[in-house]
Image (tube, rainbow, N blue to C red; front, side):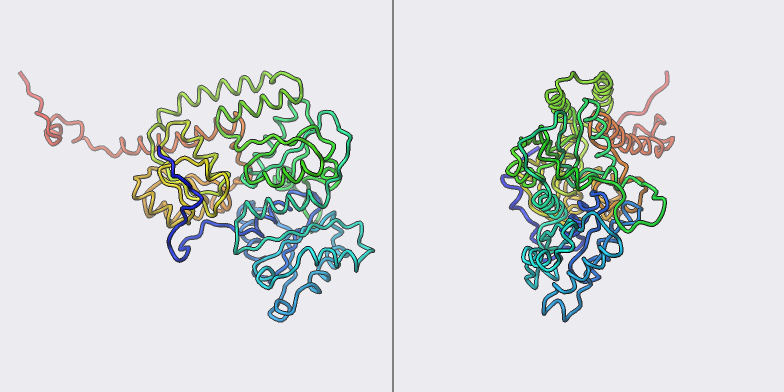
Length: 464
């Protein structure tokens, strides 16, 4: 496979996105805030901005999503929406008593030039009676960047406001900055792995607790489960920070600058070598050997790689995903012998420098469809919005990323660690195996008749 010299500078040359791949920054920030216990994300913008994000999240997770809006109209958008914002925060606090409100700007307020940092200071000055209400204000223009950027901005904002620096350390406590590419199922698997080494993880944000399908005893207008504000404040006492995903590098830098807790970076947890490094790191931190169950899982993964490579080797695949998830899949498939004919991301990102594919592009689903046809792709890996492209090309679609609204269980999918990697190998290999079996089943008796060989340029069989 060839590497483009600078993938971040190869945008699509089309004047518009005909089938968008990109998700907005406010959506990413809302996703991060959903991983905080008793939190309520608040979009500072029009009702339409909130409705769009709400529909995507509800259809993907199939859960009730707490999301509020300041509901700006034409007049407040032009003259300034601080009054709407202040009223919304006070109303939410009076009615719902959240532990935290995460405020995200939108395209409407960013275009107008709303000063979010100034609004935060002004609200704190004018409302001393709400000093116990934790607030995080983040700038998330939806005309710039994408889901990963908004997610990272929200995490960085929470670290900046909530984490308390200290010289003390809690033995066995580790921070985990979980990137937007990880599903709630991934986060839960990571928690189980870390706890198996006797460590106590503080995961920010913890979608594994809040978006795993928990059933409340009664109605709740805030998130149910996730990282508590108290845990976030205690992140400065940890021994180390495990940073999962290149998009979380900025948040990790802010945390390390504020607390002096060292950061350890993992750009993916998919694939044998990447998993080996993660488990070894946990062993080094805890001072414990890798548990026997993970050694057994590693053996079955190696066997799965041996079995699966017969079906994935030399197969041509197109991948269109958010940058961190895109990188994880391209590297994993490269290790399995597949040929990534096209890697398409919705926006530039630092990790794109490391993506290896025949073509790397910043574009949309239409670009992925074109490159799939030109490169002779045999499989497309993308979110549910790629289903029309796959149907037109007659190709199977492996759904990954957000949104996945035409399948249930997307939030519980596990694609990290030895078990997650093994499961993904089987899933991809079975797609190609089913295609081969369908081809064999389509053969007619003439393909096996002696005279049929003559049609292939071979001499017919003779009898003596």
